[in-house]
Length: 197
Length: 197
Image (cartoon, rainbow over the protein chains, first blue to last red):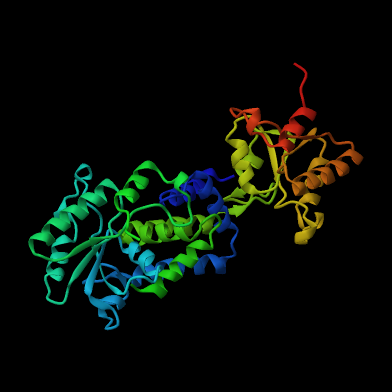
């Protein structure tokens, strides 16, 4: 066995998020066993996407161009901006089919322990966009974590001063699950956010 | 969002074993966010290892050379050959520090449903190696699955005819676990393979 070389492959793969040593072994051997054409295609796919994808200069989402499809689309409602922490959150919200407005990516959340304050996030550009006449609502979809909640409260305060309507996605019991399996914080939030039927 | 390009990256990543859609999204965004130097290093590490690693012409394990370190080492016991299904199994056995002999990789196990018979495996070359005077034991370490057991029995029968000693690694209750969590088949095997104290 040529330990050093393979260990190099394993440590390269464990640098990826969510990949532990056992997964890295499995993926490493899969790549070693793949025929050369398949391996080259794999590498070229990753490289092409990496080279071509950029971040939209308006919303911060992924795009091949200067401005992304959603920002430049006339079919999307420009009166509402959905604020998310990461570009990938746009994919998850789009997959619901429930949202037809525009987006704004913060690139993180306020986290003093990690040295991330409001100035490190794309908050100023959000406020500039929200102050445009056409915008009637900012839907804050940061994560239901302490950092996400602090970020939501921070943005809400600024928007309140500027008299711009802010909303936040609901947090509650997972659809299809049971109350028994909801943790106490989620269940508490679901009770406080109860809706009149 | 530039869906098509990113979806291409996601589907490239889900082609890896054990990587589902959610993991592929997470890894994909990690690679997109990585700076160019880190990304290039990642790709070059994988490519270098893929180009340089080959399979040992004797045991079938991984090596940079014609014959691997273990096969060419004079510090390893040539009187015992450990038979494994896959090259990666050598890593796992080496990590125990309990084995000082040589190896032989079958490249799979007998599985008629998948069209894999003894001729598709490296069994003939194993028998040739085992018939050398110096070999006193063949330790069969195929997986404790139906296919692994059938393969072990097949090899055992050939070795018995040739009067070569065959052994098999023990199967039983996981060390550090409790009897309660062992499945009935493992527990049954552990009872049948009980040792005199």
